[in-house]
Amino acid sequence: MTDHETYRELTAGFVLGVLDPMERRDFEAHMAKCSECRRDVASFAPIPSLLSRADHLAIEPLPRAVADRAAARARAEWSALARSRRWWRLAAAAAALIAVAVAAVALFSGSAGPSATVLAIESPIVTGEVTIDARTWGTAVHLELEGLPQRDRYVAWVVDDGGNRQQAATWGPTPTGAARLDGASSTPTDRVTAVVVTDATGDETLLTAING
Image (tube, rainbow, N blue to C red; front, side, top):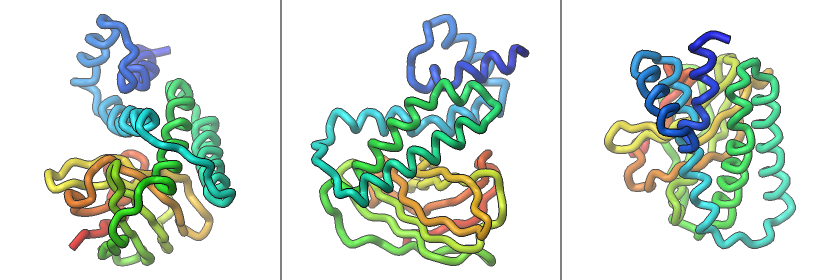
């Protein structure tokens, strides 16, 4: 195993705050010089925020359809992690699945906000609808898209008025390029300026949906 691979195995622990002080210092020094590890940290960044919501949610029994959707989403995330050859991702699998479950509960059992806002999609090939809806914990995101160009993986980001991005959802490819899914962000809805869909690295923007 190379030094770089060793550091990548520490990514999840760094985000979750479980590295010892020396490991954390070493990882931060490596990350300052490594763009791949910086992207990895950014991709896991929403997990602690999602996990923290578990202590504040009043969870009641969910409708069967909602529970099935949450379970299906968790299975999809686990399948994607299990297929990865990057074993450092498996270190974060449990945390990722918990985050997915918490997000799903929050989406459907949180206090109802104002009517959902439909964003304006800017793309020459992707069609459909992107909506955001206020929740007590942040913003619920719903995507119904057609015509996505084929990529190994997609990531939906919520962009705030400061230009910061927070990962709201991630999913794998479909044969038709269609996607229908829900996401979650702790960003307050009144600060959301756009929802952006990118490839797995976050470097290639596939569509931008503008708020207002």
